[in-house]
Amino acid sequence: MAEVRDAEVTIVGGGAIGCAVAYVLAGAGYRDIQVVEQGELAGATSGQAAGLVGQVRATKERCMLAMASVAVYSRIEQDTGYPADWRQTGSVRIAATAERAAEFQALAGVARSAGLEAEFLTPARLAALCPMLDITRVTAALWCPTDGYLQPNSLVTAYARAARDRGVTFATRTTVTGLRITGGLVRGVHTDRRDVATDMVINAAGPWAGAVASLAGQHLPIVPVRHEYFVTRAVAGWHSELPVLRIPDMRIYARAEGHGFLCGGWEPNGLSLDPRAVTIGQPLAVPPDWDVLSGFAHDFATFAPVVTEAEIREVFRGFPAFSPDGRFIVGPVPGVRGLVMAAACNAHGVSGSAGLAGHVLESLQPDPSPYVKSLSPARYYPRTWDWESARAQAQMIYQNYYSLPPRHAQ
Image (cartoon, rainbow, N blue to C red):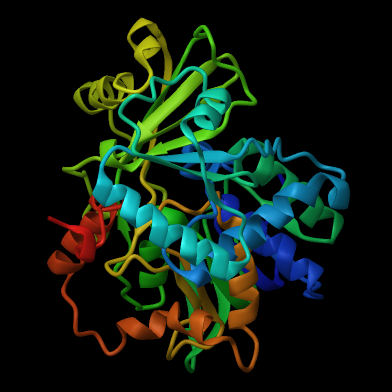
């Protein structure tokens, strides 16, 4: 464990976003960077992620962010020598209703506009790609061959090792306890080990990002919402090269995990935390919710009957941070020069980490793109929102993740 030190740039948070930002900024020429993490790298929310990487999105900008991330994952081992355990298996998005199939048509159009390959599968092709599925209820299947999945811990380790090769230092088991702000400028960071000087703090603290921002007297609606999934022991017919599955009508996703499978989903009645009650260093842990997990398994069995024979090996759960409008919070904070946000990833912190790190870098430039500008924390200033509504809206973003757009609703 390196000692926390004076640095030009201090990144708070050693998960996928913090380590990706360190890697990208060091590659862009920043030469004096440290990452400060209260536990171990990838030891909190990132380490609990399912690792799915999907590029088909509702907007061209989000599509391109995911494509940028996939481009990095596809070459990171070649570029750095460190593996991210990336598997480009492709993914299949399955519709069980005509309304959902219509949504897929719109998504395919967005994909084409972004230059992303996506096509509809015939029943025969779907059966060949996914022999473990019962496809009798499938009304449409959208295939993206360049999608896949990775192991979050491997990705974070690859970022960190490559960043170290570029001169970045890492201080783990070090908790930030305060920020030194003088005349509206970031001047330093207080930690439980020692106080250090720094010119820039990049807040990549995941569900604790709101608490870190509050150390500078800044209040941002960053809401932790529970997300959980289970992993099974070996099941006949499953292997690591099978495509990732998304079944929005059931609010679930699945992928292989070795010769077992991983299955999770988006709860219709989510569990969020009051951001004002989340403190730095506070563990965010709850017991598995077996009613929710068994619901995921029951719904998945509709398409994969072998699920009923599966034995659960492990349950993962974390509290990814959501924003009330479902957009990332990225860029400099108004009124505090040197304080930069890289937060509210809306459960895309691992999958979109490479693209998001690129957005953080762009936000530091004189003229970022309109899309990156739209992610700025400036949209929450002046404060016209209240905590209760912000929490409720952020939780709804989670709950409605797979909801149909209003134009398709019945």
